[in-house]
Length: 326
Ligand code: GLU
Image 1 (spheres, helix red, strand yellow):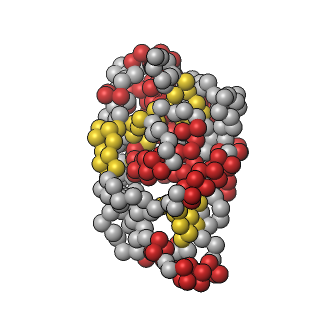
Image 2: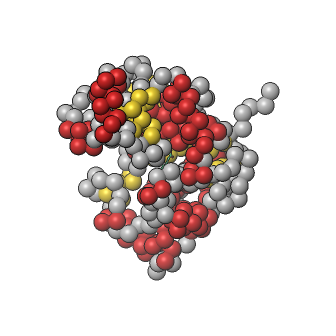
Image 3: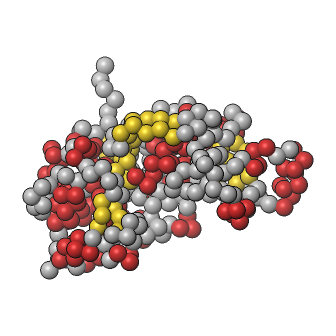
């Protein structure tokens, strides 16, 4: 029997310009899939319409192509799993919601943002999100629910199981989340918007994704996504969460650390091989730091060479990236 073909993806959210950190994740996920002769998919994650802008979606495609990446299926070229833009996939998410509902795994939540913020720090919160939802609305009586329903449109929460979640991460190694990590989470917001957690699971499954490589900031989401795969009887992909780029202050890379958007680097005249070579050097794939194209890096790809800690971008690094156009 032939082995399952490898399928990977990059799934940008078009809420801003793509920066060097996004390009790092895109390059690594592309190399991973090209290294195993798999199919690479581009999916536009514009599920949060108010935050997404069409010009950023276009710019993301353009920046990725400029860098030297390509894809076999995507919003601009179509493919067997079309559409590849989340805002056009609502019926799939509605279907998944119905399946979860039928299994008794959803409940309406009337808690306000202020109420949620007031929850004292709970021991089982996910690191990236603060306190876990204490389950307030999970245990409402029918009477209490009716009273609340008269005053407020609810969000929908998924009832998590009390099981611990563990998996082996391709980059980070064995990972284990304690039972109840993060608490019951929202799958549809009160404004009707489907949550990232649900949309990404439905899409990765529908698109036959076997390998998800993404930033370490999404590690906490993986516990939730694994619970959704199980509840929806869908096969989960393999995961690899790669180190994030951070500033010298330990914070996530942002504009104040220097403009490191791909658009800005391009405007300064940087060559794609310079940027790819620089990224590959940080990934342990290019010790000579030579300019090199992504396709020349495919043979060298090795997740084992990645740093284990976040990658600190110093002022010198910013200057180095900015000097590429000079
Ligand atoms: N759309 C998400 C983001 O841009 C990535 C989702 C994923 O890779 O699972 O952060």
